[in-house]
Image (cartoon, rainbow, N blue to C red; front, side, top):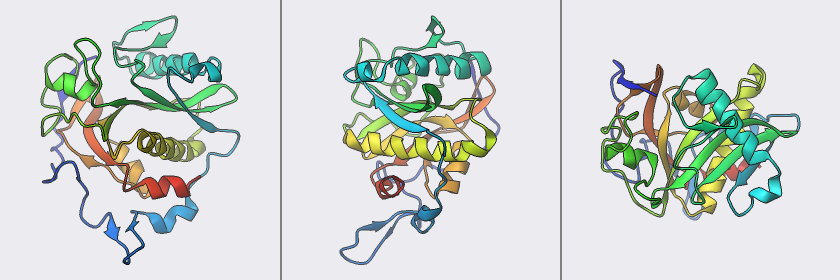
Length: 253
C-alpha cells in the first residue's frame, strides 16, 4: 500500500481541539432543550436499508454469540481492500487483518442473512499493543510507511473520549439503490457504539468522498489533515463529533 500527495488543497484545520465544529452546524436550542443536531429537521426522511439488514457491534467478549460473523467481516475486508483496491495488507485464509484488530477494538458490522454489507473498526486512542497504539498516531510517529507522518495538523490525541475509526467499507454486493441507506445505518451504529464506549469524538482516515455523503444524511465531519492518496484513493483524516450527533443516531432507531 503506497501513499502520495494529492494536488487537491488541504481542508481547514479548525482552531479549537477537540471541539471542532464548523460554525452553524450545531446550534443551541431553547433553554432546557439541549442542542439541535445538524440535519435534525430531515430525520423523518432518513433512508432505510429495507430487507433484513441489521447491525452488530462485535468484540472479543461477544464474538462467540455471532457465529462466523467476524470471519465473514474479515473476508469482506479482504474483498474490498486487497482484491478490489489492491492494498498490500496482511491476510490469511481469505481474511484481511492487521495489528489493530485486538481485544481493544470494536467492529461495527452491517449484515443480512449472514452476508456482510458494510463495516467499520473502532479503536480507542489510549490503545497500546507492543510498539503500536492506533493507526493515525503510529503513522505520525513514523511506524507506518504506507501513511504519511504529517497525516494530522496536530499531535495525535491520546484521550479516553476519542476513538479512532478505520477500515470503513461497503461491499460491492450492496445494490446502488441501497448504498445510501446502508451508509446511514453504518454511521448510526458507529455513533451509538462509540458513545456507548464513552467516546465524544471519533477520528480517522476516510475516503475524500466521505464528507459528501455525510452531508446527505445531515451529518458532518471536520477535516483535520491534508489530503493524500493510498493506492490511488483520495483520503484525509477527519474528526467526527459523535456526542453532538447522538440524537440523530437515536432518532434513526
